[in-house]
Length: 81
Image 1 (cartoon, rainbow, N blue to C red):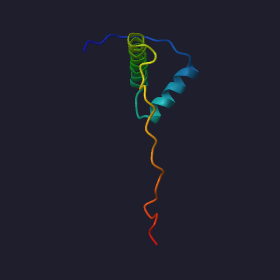
Image 2 (spheres, rainbow, N blue to C red; image 1 turned 180 degrees about the horizontal axis):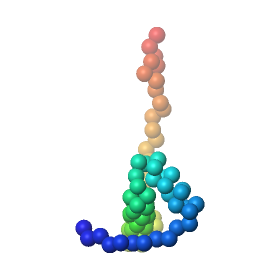
Image 3 (cartoon, helix red, strand yellow; image 1 turned 90 degrees about the vertical axis):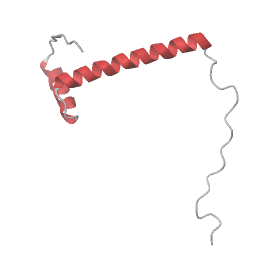
Image 4 (cartoon, one colour; image 1 turned 120 degrees about the vertical axis):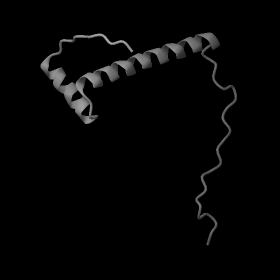
């Protein structure tokens, strides 16, 4: 994978917050910021895919039958004297 330099100016308070967040995860600030950007990009692409699927199939694309009722919870010791 090709890499490129990306320079960013941050105020001191934001940089300290980023350092704390990164330290909690045992990461460098650079790795933390890159992972955050990757996660945000994935979330946005996923939402776009969901929106496109809903447009293609229509908003009502969910199951048409109600879910079957679940049996009542039975304790393992029920009925054992």
